Image (cartoon, rainbow over all chains, first blue to last red; front, side, top):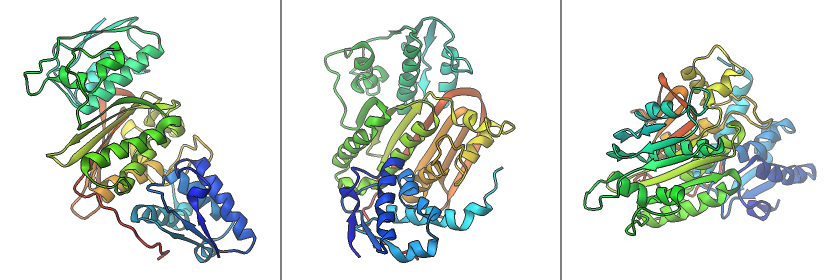
Length: 101
Length: 295
């Protein structure tokens, strides 16, 4: 299991496009049977757009239990961790029962 | 057409001013304007942003705008013309400051019209500036930076525009930083009412901040941006968020249970696009490295 440094692949964690680059890196490793540890070394902020494309869209290909077992993060800060977990919590637990007003 | 700036230019008084310039479809009401500053007694940061966005909108329609003003009274403690001049407002629109004493104040990040393409670099340099005046590390401002990223992503995804006017003011004695960002796109309610035509503007704003709701203006949109913004500002920082868009107003403040209170209302006044004002606390900023756990 190797560590993948996010900033080796994108300049910043800002847009959907940035997220898609990281998603592709993760999926490549998953498809090879590898676990992934992502390092946020040097990253001071991530947007929800980035999180959606990098991580949430993985739910289209893998179930949440698989993602939890095979994806981890290091060199992170509370704000980033909270946003990642909050997004996953909604998409896994609430999205299907979400009704519009 | 002469239009006087209000005596106090704030979120409350901006509607009447805008309404004299633009109709409810955002179209100019005249072929040329004279913005008269002579009655202006005080202008909040949001006023600077709104005024600039308005001028930008008129220029987009090739409508000339001239200014009527008095020279800055630098002997007075609070002179709005001096504040505007020091904020480089007149340099932006007249290509010169009003007097040779104009200088950027250490507590002000000057008004800028920021395109999405330039927004990351702008936010990065702004955090560098803010870290300097707060005497903290740049990485400590990650939460604030991510909040502003949400706003620019929102403009790109939803407003049909690609830029926002942004102005930032630090209030050291109040331990606050106020950020005002405005675009004159179609507005959040109008965007939502294309899908939900029976909603009022106030109801549409409520829906917009609900996690999971999306107009799918872009295919990857999951309705997380405004929810994340409010969560990170109000719960993460203890700050306040004010959103004005079309006939709707929404504001969110901390409640006494470490959650957030959200109030939305409709107004007779009309804001042609979206104005977001965020009041960050500077006394709650902290850098927290944290080991990630799925629990």
